[in-house]
Amino acid sequence: MIKKGVYAAGLSVINTNATLNVEATISHASDAIKNGLHGVFFFGSTGQSQLISLSEKKELIAKIANHKLRKQFFIGTGSNSLNENIDLARYAMEYNFKEFLIMPPAYYKGNTDEGVFDFYSKLIKALPKIKIILYNFEKLSGYKFSADVVSKLVKNFPNNIIGCKDSSYNLFENLKLPNFLMFPGSEAKLLKGLELGCSGCISAVTNVTHSLARKVFDDFETKKTQIKNDQLINVRETFDQYNLISALHSFLATKDKKFKNVFNDKGGVQVINEKEKRGLFKPKEAVIREINVENNNPKLEINYKVDDNVVFSKLLYDSI
Image 1: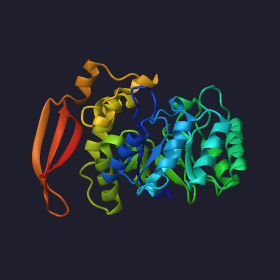
Image 2: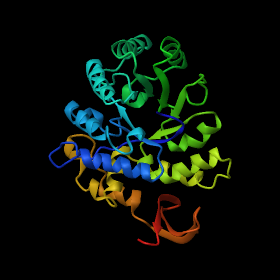
Image 3: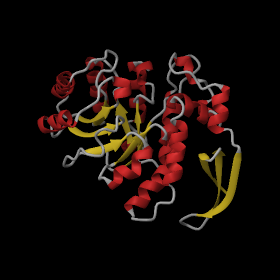
Image 4: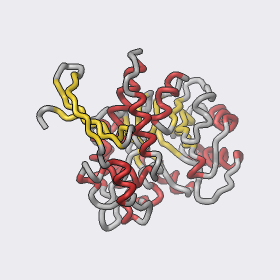
């Protein structure tokens, strides 16, 4: 069940033959959860859903159905086809997945409020028990949800429309609906959103900032002084200078062997070039200091910096 928290739009790991590496994709999501995330959504825009076949998506769903982290895994249907959305959601519901992140069709531009309402209405008519988190991402879909359309969907389908991921950022500050989850699509908006009554965030960059974002979330929930939010925003803003999917894969390839196979073999987004790589993660300064954690076990924190921006903060246990 989706609740308040910090979530990732999960990355997909691609084999050199352009197929989905199901095991590695699940492993990456599991690692992100173990590092602090409340959950991971598969097959969103960050997960290159449009480039992954329906059969590959079904294979992953079947694999995670009995996973020990099953309750923290969620599905994005990620298709422009109404029937494929229905097909994949129905398949996942057979494995007891109930909640889905669903964007309006994004290929042909010119979606209208009426057309978007009709799209979700047909989904719900076909799958009356489905729970939907609306995905508001104008940059990709060409359509921006208005507060009126969201309110109309909730009014007509109160048991089905349960929340919104707002990556257009026109809703999270002002739309207030009872029992409705609101997740801005960036951890740079996490603290502000929480202060306004939002539920957390669903972000691409939490694939990297998982523990940092969780710290900000937990400190807000426990009313502690915020000491990591500026750093979290700095990391996000650094990644925002590049294509996010390219930058995330390029960055993770330097520290995680699962990402060594260059993901652009899928025919999608290209990895960033060498100059961009140097700007993203080549450390010009590494500040290493010992810190204390909750159980008083010492760790080393390495802050890699590019200019004045912290790009990556890594905690190293003394056993490493």
